[in-house]
Image (cartoon, rainbow, N blue to C red; front, side, top):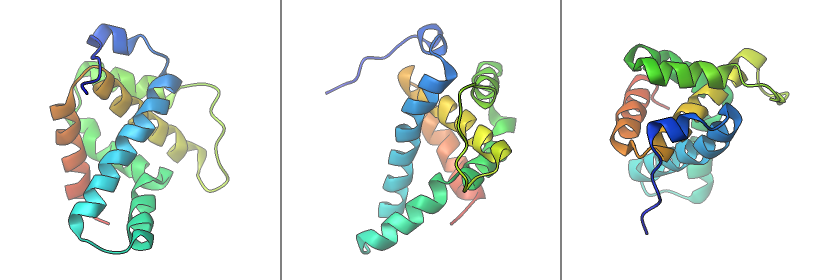
Length: 133
């Protein structure tokens, strides 16, 4: 079943928190696919590998990797995600890292909602190549 695709304008109209909410699952699905494709191992090990890549500190570093690759619109979505209000930072993360992780998730949410799967794959591949776990 194909999901409906929004225009870039429609997707960009969502609040950064909504984009991050959706982007969190988009990014985590990519991570889970990546760790499964690395090798058939037990679920506990797969979980540990996935958790490493979805924690705020890793996602914050991922922003450094992709930021130079972003278009003006993507940079704007990233900025909006980083500056989103109403974020409560868990004790396990630094506020600056958590805001950057939220920004990354907002970007992936925006790209997914606007049907830019190829761009998602391009950015995610760059992250995986630059930040091996």
